[in-house]
Image (cartoon, rainbow, N blue to C red):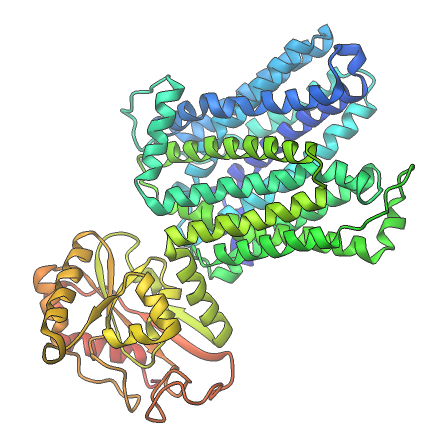
Length: 626
């Protein structure tokens, strides 16, 4: 994992990482310190109940996300994001000054005003935080960068929450809370000065200050790309799901585990470490590109371990006095609870990191910050709805373990719904799982596959899973042209049918299908898609490369796009090849985890891409291993 950690040594990422870490830390330091202070000293500040004050504080902090996210997105698209980051840190220092005045005057309205302003600070920084990364990181660094940001954010939340509680309980005068917050904000300003320039993509943008009309406009930008919008819905669902669990930790520790404050800290730390571990593993598992196949994998874990937390929750531990932490840790049932929370965090990291990277990668640069703003608005909305729903269910008598189980079942329903609307997620998962479970794939030159725009990918045809292997390795979806008979194969037919594969037949077999296939290829290329073909026309019978047919020339005559040659090696002799005359007869013929390779060559211009020339390039890439 040296790649992603190496970003922490580079100026294009390290100052930004430190700035966002300190910002998240300060938000939670001040917010939790204020909540703890009002909880234990409510009578000194107001006649309102402590529980009401805690919820009021949470609502005030999240309100700016609804009011100003749309404006924040416009500002991040109009101005240099590095400059905005520095201005946000200056605002943060001023907010701590307002908080100090509130503490000195013993004024609850002023303190709530400071909390509202701190929510504004987070709202303004949100679009900068995620829209700046594609400007400073390469595509193969986005997963690692997002992993560091997500892990760092959750660690900052944990440390800030703990520090806020300790600070509120230990200082003689509450104004020291504001002093501590000012020091952290000043440190954040110093780190922000090192963030490299991130020029505005739309400097001529006219800022619309109407939050309602601009919110709908930002959501409309997000909806232009269906995959991006559904990814945003997936991110928002994750924040609802995660926030629902986090909000119950204090009551769960007290009323289910029978623990005290140390038990709450342990639950929070376990979940946070899980998020960090899962986030950091994403780059290693996905091979440094945005692997959305991890998203279904993450949702499966979120469901399974959420359900197991329901079954693992002990009964009868809570008593009149809290148990010591060591006493709780001596119980196997508590270790099972901690394992579930840890794995919930790990699979949450698998779920959230690729989604953020996908939104960044596939959002148009001129709208990216505003799309991130739409994401922040929907995140806040989902969290509020989740909190209200959880409060209603608990108020109606549902137990906390049952709430976790219900949320896990709903997670499965949401996952099936999203993957039904965008099969690409599920198909990439199947392709990724097949490659990981059966082979050890080595790739070279995949950077030659264009990040955007139309291209034709041509490859040698060794086995029935060639397209699946290529699909699992490609950073972009590919529409393969395939023999219509493959669609009758149960699993492979399902995969290809739902990923937009184009069925084709010979002129002798079905001339109408042949013409329809070429017409669909032309439409796909005109739309800017990647189209994959196997110019040999059939799977090799002897492991050798067969002559490339003329179909590629007809495709390029209508759509003169670049051609990327690909070569598969190591698949000959596998279960899916025709080494014995017929494929798929002898399971585990070469054992498991056999080595295969996929190599991509430099794009070939359409006018040079004759069948014979492409065949020679693919043969050279393949080498001697069929």
